[in-house]
Length: 125
Image (cartoon, rainbow, N blue to C red):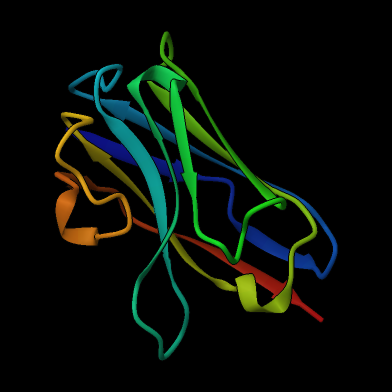
C-alpha cells in the first residue's frame, strides 16, 4: 500500500490550498483516510479524517470551519481543502489510512495502519 500526498507549497496568510492523497494497493472505502501534521519542534497532531466512504468526518478544533476533508472512492483519493490559512498551519502534512473504521481513536497516530510521505505547507504572515 502506498499513499502519495501532493499539493503542498508556500502561500500567504488567508490563502487557500488543497492537498491530495492517492492510495494504491488497497481500497479504503470501508476504512479511514485522513491527515496529520507536524510543525517544526512540535509533536505530530491530528488534522482531519474521513471514514466509511464519507459517512463521517472528524476535525481538530484548530481547523474546524477552515479545513474540509472529502474523499473520492472511485479514485481512492482523499482531499484536504484548506482555507483561511494561518502561519500556525505551517507544517509537514502526512496522509494516513486505516483498513477498518471501527475501534479507532481518530486523534491517535498509532491507530492508523499506513502513512505516506509528507508534503510541506508553509504559510507566511
